[in-house]
Amino acid sequence: MWQALHVADLLRQKGAETEIVPMVSSGDVDLRPIDGKRSVGVFTKRIQQALLDGEGDLAVHSMKDLPTERHPSLRMIATPDRETVHDCLVTSEGIDLDSLSDGARIGTGSRRRGAQLLRVRPDLQILPIRGNVQTRLQKLEAGEYDAIVLAAAGLERLEMHALPRVTLSLDIMLPAPGQGALALEVRSGDDSAIDRVRSVNVPATAACTVAERTLLAALHGGCLAPIAALGTIDQAQLQLQARVLSLDGQECLQAADQLPVDLQGDQCEQAAAELGRRVAADLISQGARTLIEAGR
Ligand SMILES: NCc1[nH]cc(CCC(=O)O)c1CC(=O)O
Image (tube, rainbow, N blue to C red; front, top):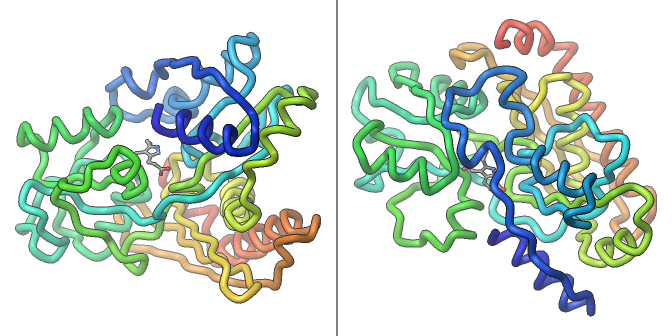
């Protein structure tokens, strides 16, 4: 809801009025453990169906929840400003990773988060957790876990500034492709929506996230694999760093590369995609496919 209202606000600044159509996704209500096929697209499918059925004209997704395989009748056409990309450790005391007791119970259903934590703290117990941010916080509070890992973006959007949490550094926890960014999707061919929605696109965010998502797609990992990637722009250079891990964190392949981009140019997203493919190829040459297969 926050994200939809935010996009409505951005569109209003560009002179376009909108109406919010609230919806509950299965990711909000299905609390069963994460499982291969069933868990792909749980936060986005319901909303995409509403677009296809004409219940709405614009879908607002968390980009990291949106599978990379595109629907033939839908188009992701804009990526507004990005929130913080980091993950953070949430505990009742606000302690850091080093201060967690030996064998502490960590709630995360994300293989990417679990593997990166185990890489630096092999003693931790990684336990499944599901639901939206509020549900996960309730489970922490109830004592089911000693800590949980959440995206800073979600907490900042929900204005949970008082929540005891520490930011995990990028050396320890590289984010999911698209983390902190929004994906705006419309029906392909809906030219009036496309024109208006394009006006809130931020080219720098689009370039970074295209690189991250192209890498993810090239690895055929799907959104559940232990794959982390982050694109950044510094002095007209687009940089992409990425990691593929074994589930126990004992193996960790890393790659990074960069190329010059012209954010005003119309070739920018193609260049970003090229960078994503290049970094993916590097990881594949190091054996990423085997790690990803083993982690299924
Ligand atoms: N999988 C749920 C989800 N989807 C997007 C966010 C956070 C906001 C974002 O990354 O854009 C979250 C919660 C979390 O991972 O902590």
